[in-house]
Image (cartoon, rainbow, N blue to C red; front, side):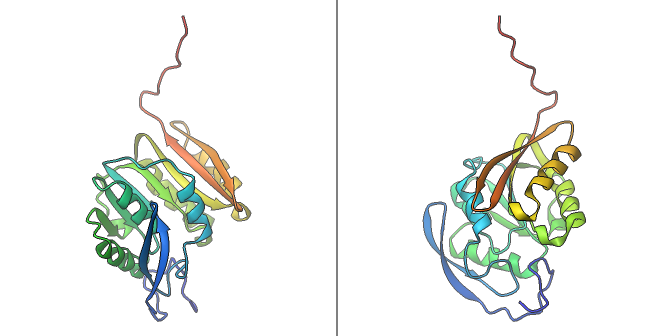
Length: 213
């Protein structure tokens, strides 16, 4: 990848398009990846853990894949929820092109691959699913989550996968302290060195406790 990072807006490295076979949403698929994007040769371990340990996606509304890369989370959601609109958001133009290419090849017409500033401000999300770019640095990562987590619909969840060695537990504590009140964060899964975190945006007003007579 040379000096490029997968969070580079316009990678200067050669594109080197390649075809790989992956299993997404229970289907064996041939997809296109390229140099200058995250995990171009395989479905990365963190995303695989997330896809294996999250609930079914909502059947409709707007769904967000934050930091989409070449699109494994986006494609999985679009296949599983054909009546939903799936937003693949990334700063890497090459990654977004790959998402569009893969969605078209698979006949998925419910995918919008967009730069962050191109998502209409009024759009809110029934779920967010993300393998966030931890290596952008703490300040950038926190800014990313502060921008998008508040755009969850009420009583909706974000699902994040983070490598344990790269600060999953400290990120969980930060989310709990930053998005409070009105939100909660739980670790739902630990597998293969990764944590899956669930961030719930509660309703307004919050649900009252059940009183047993």
